[in-house]
Image (tube, rainbow, N blue to C red):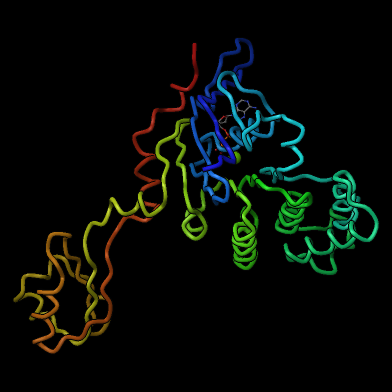
Length: 318
Ligand SMILES: Nc1ncnc2c1ncn2[C@@H]1O[C@H](COP(=O)(O)OP(=O)(O)OP(=O)(O)O)[C@@H](O)[C@H]1O
Ligand SMILES: [Mg+2]
């Protein structure tokens, strides 16, 4: 597998404190491989070190220890810089320019000229859902619209690897859906997308692999199915046309929630296959509404990983 991104023991200490500076470990020995063509979700709660990692990869800050490579070359390699795109966490642009002028400027830096440049800018603005307002100064743009312009900017040079720091932040549900589609389109074109998020539903909808970072440390990495598959905990059986005395007689009341008129959700442990309960209930006239495995969502997993993490003081060294 060709690697799009590799970090080895990547570590970053920031100097904190007013009089006496002490190192604060924002990222602790991150070793991570991301294959080409992956949509990779870099997940973690606030302060986990996601932005720090992206800044290290973009050389906006420098590691205390360790190293990082993109497309097999050390970060900072000029050829590599041409082949990547980056959406910062809080994109900020000179706001007297229009969206069109701004992107035209970026396209010019990457060598696009004349009609080709105008076409490139137009297509990208269409893709991120900026309409006629592309001719307005950016200071009149809402946060979500700036976010979209930021995304277009990250894609201006047709990058092979795209780094997005919280791409969905500030977007309304429609905007989120559009960005999800855009990311899937990038994937279909064979690009690698590395994005940070704490919106787990987005990761669930998009990622081939995820890493979970907590307190500066990598907690887990793998495909989503690997991670959630470990946690099938039981079954939820929803039935209708059943009365309480029947459930009581079958000893199911403890595990049952009434969700409507003669409609109940029954939780069964994993070692108690639902077939038997279902057939016993069916004999009494009950009908099956749905049967679902109960398993941890990424959200549950994430919450569990966050609890039991070292307190922030322990990240101050010395
Ligand atoms: N320039 C800095 N100086 C000192 N500490 C910093 C600096 N930048 C980040 N930190 C600290 O490093 C830790 C990691 O921050 P980082 O911004 O990488 O987290 P994050 O995972 O991106 O969080 P969020 O989800 O809030 O964006 C935090 O505790 C933060 O306070
Ligand atoms: Mg961040």
